[in-house]
Amino acid sequence: MSTAIPNAAAAPSHVRGERVFHLSPSRSLDGRIRVPGDKSMSHRSIMFGAIASGVTEVAGFLEGEDSLHTLNAFRAMGVAIERGGPGQVRIQGRGAAALVPPTDDVYLGNSGTGMRLLTGLYAGLGVPVTLTGDASLSGRPMARIVDPLTRMGARIDTAAAGRPPLSIRAAVPLRGIEYTCPMASAQVKSAVLLAGLHATGTTTVHEPAVTRDHTERMLQGFGVEVRVDGLSASLEGGQALQATSLRVPGDISSAAFFLVGGCLSPDGAALVIEGVGMNPTRTGVIDILRLMGGRIEVRNERAQGGEPVADLHVCGGGLHGIEVPPELVSLAIDEFPALFVAAAGAAGRTVVTGAEELRVKETDRIEVMVQGLSALGATITGTADGAHIEGGRLAGGQADACGDHRTAMAFSMAALIADGPISVLDVDNVATSFPGYAALAAGVGLDIRESAPGAGASA
Image (cartoon, rainbow, N blue to C red; front, side):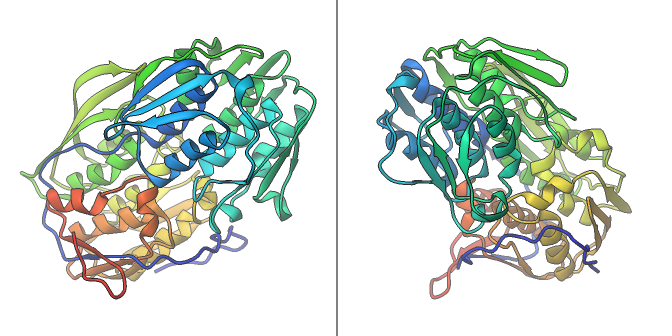
């Protein structure tokens, strides 16, 4: 069953996609795969390479729609960016001062990361530009970055209730501030730090909980001194970036769907996911699945571009319900759609709390997962900051992803615990983070086909 939450944030409206995932009950996932490059790092590699001095070489770049919007944003500002083979990008940076204001609005599609980080960077540079997005992005909250940036001296106009589009006006040089984030958000932290790069004085950000630290790590790789002390990060304004070479590891958020699918497979099934980024601020999904009884081994650990990387070996055998520890929530916030499916297939009850941030993602992910899993036969009750989920088999049916790439892929893994076929609606945006997902999943055992109205289904 599902329960409506009074005053819960409504999922932003969007233009519905036509593509559908068609799934038959699937037994297990087996084999070896490599998931696309990390989306968070791909965004940052383009941003930092574009404002650095010299040529930055990037390997493993995610060629998804979100990352490509960031790439095109800097091309529109006069940065020469060349595409080589798959995942290969060459950025000819001439320093931040060489950027020219774009002649048109910068369109960022569905990318909240792109919009929030670019707003901080452009505000710090005083670049006049208007950032727009699709209908879903236009419904997401941006006051959380506009407020601290305004305190620094930025001039940013927004639509009603602080929503996009965001228009950044030329302003006097910003001043560094000490800012305490009211929520655990790497995007807010990063926006303020990127504005601080070109502000006077010191910019310091304090967080209420650990969030991903790709900005701090990658800025250091580009020669910027960033001081990290527990839940605080600070930097001095006026530092210049120097070009470097880096390799983007596989995205653990993309690997999460296969980690869940592997754990829900029967005993004897084995899946290997190669070259996954193991940044300690991103591994909460592994910790949570292990607490649920998941058998996940980390092998072949190595460093890659300043980030830890490893191969993940997953053995099937099933899961059991838990109360998710609150301290792990911010370390797995993007992976909760997949974890909701894990809980729906686990023995016993799973309780998720402290995850209210899920309500302001590409969709209200709590509501979308509650409604979709209920439609597939799960016993699930939504709460203001999470859900209570009773595990068991699913009947199958039709789930609506509501245009959210992560809920779409999560619902597809429900085929491993379903007794009947599943249709997942509105899955077009999967390409924002995981181009080729259906084909890769089919290659390791998921009985999945993809189609659009009037077209034949294909894996």
